[in-house]
Image (cartoon, rainbow, N blue to C red; front, side):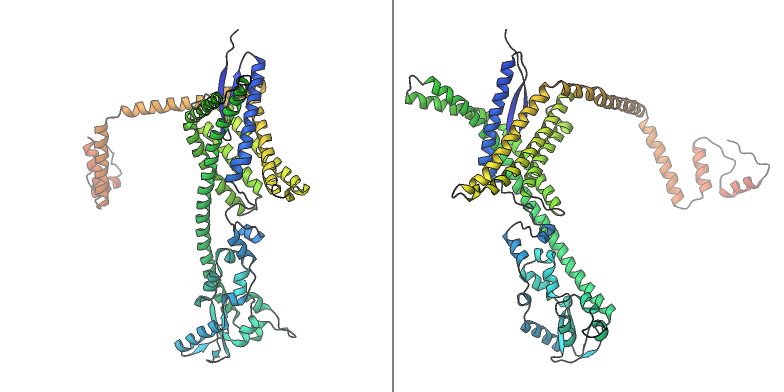
Length: 534
């Protein structure tokens, strides 16, 4: 008996998986399943030891430096590591000669000097100092300031005139690198007096100067932070989008090419086993390669779609990863999970909302379920990757010369991807052949889908009735009435008597009123015997 087959196409990672959903031969169904398992193995090898290893270098905290990660000592690159680990050295930001030069410029410019903290008169000599209102150490110790600014940048904002205050040498030396609040409220040794009390500092004015200076520095950092995130997120999202797009496209090409060659070569070897001819072998091999090339060319549209979808998913995963890292530090394997989750969610929403292939409801839900479950299996694969990586790192394999580092990086990825792939094919097989899934989809179709369709039909019917009534309106008559109302409004805006305007309007409609102006109207209203007639 001739068997019949129907094929369903699903996209998994970088390949198109063909599942025989119905057949009359149980052995053929199992063979098809085994064939798909083998295809997943090829895909796992290609992505683990090739594409993923080459294209993606995931790191803890993602590729965009965030303030949260900077505070935790997690750095996106060497530039931020140097800024984060740099020790404070006052000489990096200002020298005594620079301070003296600034002070002398003020001496030349100002006739009279007064302490900006006490209001006392100052002398143009060594008893007068310039104080950093927000101390240079306070600036250095602020993670956001150090992350966003180079040494020269901190030097510029720290030594800006808005952050300088003339004061007594004793006050400046006592304040040192302390913050304003700490200095003012610190008690003197051997005394119950605070520095503010001892030096007779106007706390309100000193605090005001500090807040103004801090406000300007914070405003500067806010602009720098916005520039940093917009620039870095834009750059990383394009980079990650391009990489994931290339991975998706190359995955289809490499997997299809490898699958055909690996399937055909054993048959060729078997054919030439008893009568081997090198010339025939090379000719047959060339034919196999040409067949693979043709197969890849036929998938050109799929390859372009894979790149486009991969690019969008890469951009979204970069943005989501960065947002998460503003509050939490993600491990590098979490970055992979986010990337795969974004791919799966995007594909599922594409099918459910846009339905580009015009699938019926049952197949649309089925396809979306497969993508979601495939994403879950990929996430499980990433968790397995992390577990195997920890196991290998503690086993000492990484210390093997030459190959240790490669094995430490590639084996966990291969194992995780392989497990994920096998789970994915099993899920597809289950969804296509499970009575439970068919019952669930049938129930959804008979409840949710039917109700939505009926509601839409009813709404459409009401809309059609309303439109048909609108079509009966005399447009010329409508315009005429609209013009009349506009004229009435214009007369009222010009200040004409309302009674006169309304009387004229009613007269135009054929209503003869018993009054024609406000005075007549008023007289009629005062007459107890008046009866309104139309």
